Length: 204
Ligand code: GDP
Image (spheres, rainbow, N blue to C red):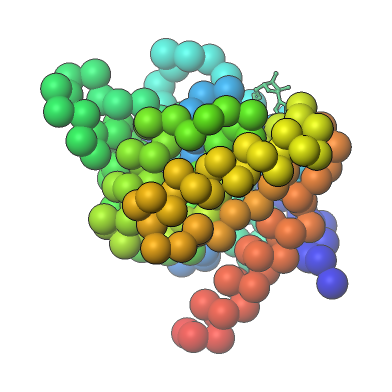
């Protein structure tokens, strides 16, 4: 049975990892390029109309937003990623706040990497996932805005993405298809989160 989101509360915005909640609950984090549909997805998962909209203003201080779900775990809205401006090499050079969250946040259970289901695999997304792989960070992909494609277009697009991933990954990472406009993917993502919560809670 799918988890019921009875309660979702905005807890805080943090400009640094050390400011993030320190109560030991698990983080389920969401990231992607700006405009990928992250706020809409988080709102869909949390049953909210406009819980997460903090990320909207470009150029604003980049913040990590924590939402507490059912007093049990956090949904974490990370800043949209881009390459750090100063970098020449580009390699693994994502913004400091993103890097440090990913590398230092010990209670992060999984990172959901959002990609627009309409787009061809983008270099920055592939590079970001490569970085996660190198660092051993558990992640899953969410293909967003599925309602913008026909079923055939969507299948083709996912197949194209899989082929590209399999050029460098042994297997396709766990993935989900979502549409915040049509509430698609909600149960699957919440079930997945619930499963990880149970697994990690039992391990402790
Ligand atoms: P963010 O910048 O990643 O947080 O993206 P937003 O959630 O603000 O969404 C960016 C734009 O895409 C907005 O105009 C949303 O209305 C639109 N959008 C987001 N998710 C969906 C979706 O599932 N379907 C459709 N059709 N549009 C979406």
